[in-house]
Image 1 (cartoon, rainbow, N blue to C red):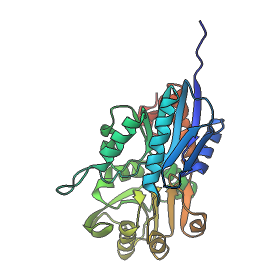
Image 2: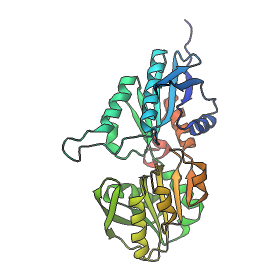
Image 3: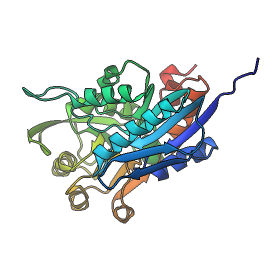
Image 4: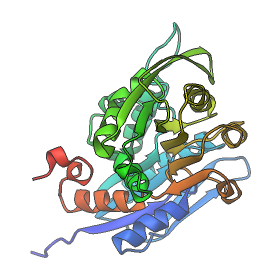
Amino acid sequence: MTEMKKTMGIFSGSVYPELAEEIARNLGVELGNVKLEKFANGEIYARYLESIRGTDVFIVQSVAGAHINDALMELLIMADAAKRASARTVTAVVTHYGYARQDRKAAAREPITAKLVADLMTASGIQRVMTIDLHQNQIQGFFNFPVDHLTGLPILVDYFKAKGFSDDEQICIVSPDVGRAKAAKKFCDMMDADLAIMHKGRPGHNKAEITALIGDVKDKICIINDDMIDTAGTIVAASETLKAKGAKEIYICCTHPVLSGPAFERLENSPVKEVVCCNTIPVPEEKLTGKIKLVSVAPLFARAISNVYNNGSVSTLFDPDFAL
């Protein structure tokens, strides 16, 4: 009997091929060849230009940006094409999970769109999702197959440690709202820093106001940590509060630089010294000349893909509590 060989195929959607290329390079493989087009009427077309029969297919796509709906639809179509081409497995490497903030009914007659997205992925033939810092951890429960939930915290911590911040006793990690307090506490433990927590109110969509601050930030270097920055309203309001309370320097870090609408202008005009983001979403090159700095998630995703492919542990990549 002929022995079956496992093969890996890394394919990129059209949103962020540069990140997919970097992931493939870290894996020591070449990106697979897939044709992606749009018809004149806007419909999306995908065709794999190489055999993927029996291949473990990993589709890298960031469901984000001005054309977020096209990004999602393209991912679904690529998954469907892979399934119909007899791929052994289909894994969606979703560097940013769009619609994650619509994870529950906050008011009557609202949808739960994050669950709908999960259902669409399942229907398309996706058998596994790999993503990073979901807006709510519970979104993993919307799927009936494995979800590899990575975190960018160690990457961000390494960035600040490289700046010598871990040697400074006056570091304070700030959670911009109560919901991020647990992640901020992990950040504190990794940096051996103090913790401050803010209370945020939302008078409307994309509007935020800071109503309370718990913790001492006077004369301290403050690092605000959030999972994403969208219009930057919350994060800038938080930085202004910290400045008013006597913070020495203010930094912001996040996993997902959504950066919609007035975000760039708000950040540039804020008291923030630097905004450090993971490169889960493409940021225009011309916007990286100011305060915004990017750190790469490609090595982390590459190691996670390798471990999944080789039946290794994923949690050991970022959580020392699970290391054997």
